[in-house]
Image (cartoon, rainbow, N blue to C red):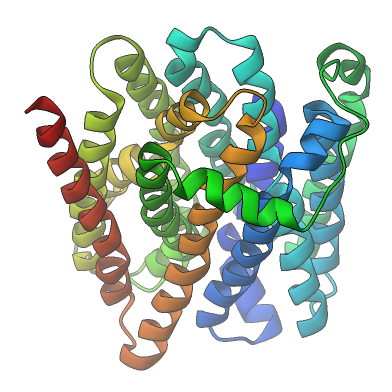
Length: 384
């Protein structure tokens, strides 16, 4: 499951990492990157709301394969470079890749000890920064060598190969599937009701919305932003990869603390406030700022805005009804996709109207501030 999500994270983040080359070649405005990821998030939202029945029917491992195949098709389609192809690429890659997290959560919640779910899920979710790290280190260099189209085709090929490698594992891990389970349109409503009808899951949904929206914004615009303050695309990609690397031990640390030392809700509140402060500081960066300081701010942002997933997913799996973990996880994550859909669009709108990259980072950090305040108040209320 770690490798599955690594390939998905690589494929989904690739357009952002090599965005400068795509923008130059296709002669489009930088704000369109936000629109691309907004469409990706919209497709993910729909798929995650309705994927529960498919996971139950076909099995988590089989759905992981399907996610990788769809990501392959979507990534390859983007290389055509036309508006229609880019739109279809965002829909197919976004919708296909969205299945990966609910599928892996369904599988691991069945196999792991409940006590250590935050740690197990955090280790699994280090796959996302691992995929971003691979993209940040290799994609800009590969793009310089052979162009952005060939780079995306190479990523698509890697996803397809790994999908084939998962085939023998279907017999082992898909033994709980229910072949008679059918998909119904009412599944969308049932998922929303299950999530919003429980106070605990509802709070996690709002957190997922704010956190994932800020993460999507940072992922989409970080490299492009650095190129506007004096960094070359390769240097910006390298700094991005270094910062993202911090999320790997960060996620494991938060998962370990949440399993052994600290309330998971307290950790989420601290992460919320940390990502607000670091995104505001990133907005202030300019051409004269030392690279070490910019990198430090980026690392703090990575350790917060890119490191919350394991705690949220473990708490979701713990609170979900038995046999519905995949569907409920998809429901909570669908709120995250609302954030990933809306905040990059807000960012691109602010960029178009103000010409400032920094204003967007500040604005997109505000929902996390509200969530942090809410979690702190809930924690105090629980103690009293």
